[in-house]
Length: 225
Image 1: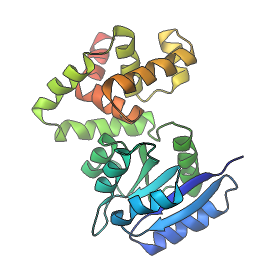
Image 2 (image 1 turned 90 degrees about the vertical axis):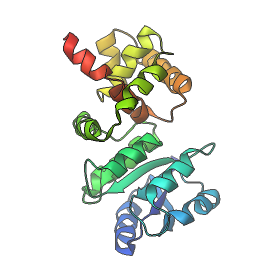
Image 3 (image 1 turned 180 degrees about the horizontal axis):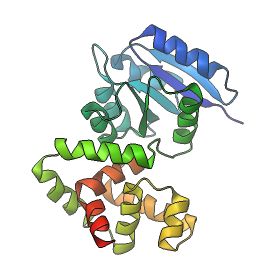
C-alpha cells in the first residue's frame, strides 16, 4: 500500500509536533514536511509532493487562505484540509470557496483527523451533512445580494439531471445516497459529478455544495417537498 503523503502547515510548533506524533503511528500516512507559515508552502509542495496539506488558517505572514488559493490554482494541486478552532467561520468559508476539500477542528479526536486525511486523499470531502448545514446557515449572513444571481447564472450550463445531482451534493450526500435517491448507479453519479466540476470549473464537491446553496437550490428543494 502506498502511504498518503501529508504536509503540515501551522505556526504553532506544539500543534505540528502533536499532529506529527499522532500521524506517525499510522502505517498508511507519511509526514513529508512541516511549515510554520503559508509563505513556505509552495516551495515545500514542489520538494515533497504531498497528497494532502493540513493547513492552519491564521498565520503571521501568509495566511492559510492565501496559501490554499495559490495551491489550488496549480496543476496537480494537493488536497487541502483546513485546520481551525471554529466550526462556522468566514475564513473557513472562504478557504472552501477557493478549493479546500474540508476542515477539521484542532481539538478533533486523533482518529477523526486520520479518517479525514484518508477521505480527502481518496477524493471525498470532509464535511458531514450536519457541518454542511451549519456552514450554509453562516453563509446566509455573509453572502452578498448579487451572489445568488451570479450562482444561478453559472449553474445554468447544467442539464436537469446534473442540477439534481448538484442539489444532492449540496445536501452533503455521498455518492451511494445520491444514487439511491435519484435512481441511478453510483458510477453514473460519479460521471455527473465529474461533468459538473468540469462545466463549472470547480475543484471539488464542497464548491459544488456552496454554489448550489448560493443559488438557492436547496431552499427550492425544501419548498417542493
